[in-house]
Length: 280
Image 1 (cartoon, rainbow, N blue to C red):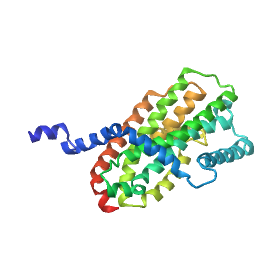
Image 2: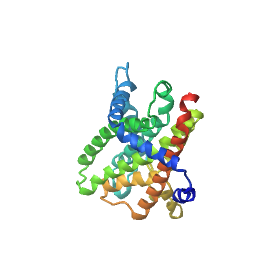
Image 3: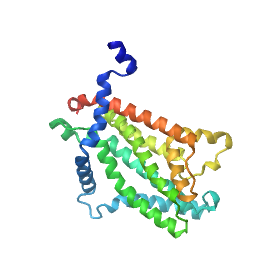
Image 4: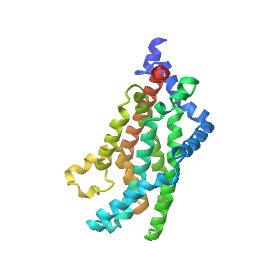
């Protein structure tokens, strides 16, 4: 009997598999609570400030204008195919903002909600979904603004643009896997959030958000494919600006990485979760 179980789960015990599956079940079971906590998170972020939720958009908009003046006006840069730089840049910057904000907030989510975890039997795995849901709201607003820019520059609407929803889903899967992994480790090593800030800055410049992949020497361009975020950024731009469908090979690679991170993150979170209350 034991050998049959070990053949069925060569790397995990059956109990560990059950714990992982329980994490995913709880995301559905507590869906109403997730929405309520996400709304509370949005309200509480800027409580007591005069501008309120405006601060959510002030910094990204300022960054967009800075890059516009430096590259479009200063260096007279354009996107590939003579696409206006501002349109090309924003179509890659919007998904980056979503990835950056959601991963940063999820990584700190368990530590920031220690009062829940220490005093009650709280399903801490739902915190990733709470902060992801909260991050979807500003992402939706920026997407509407991006749609307005597409209309202003007379970009023709095409059904392939609806695939942007697919890339939103890709981002969600990637972020939840990484978020579960990092937020669980963050409970024990508080340096994680500081290292994440540096890592995200490096990732921003290592991903073709400001610069075009065409500017890389040809022998280095395949290296970009190892960056799963490149698949999302180029996916947004492809379906919005050139009606280009995602490459099949890159799709297989992305989902291999994303699902690996999702399973790894859920496994690590489920293993460390029972110790959260004792450590915090």
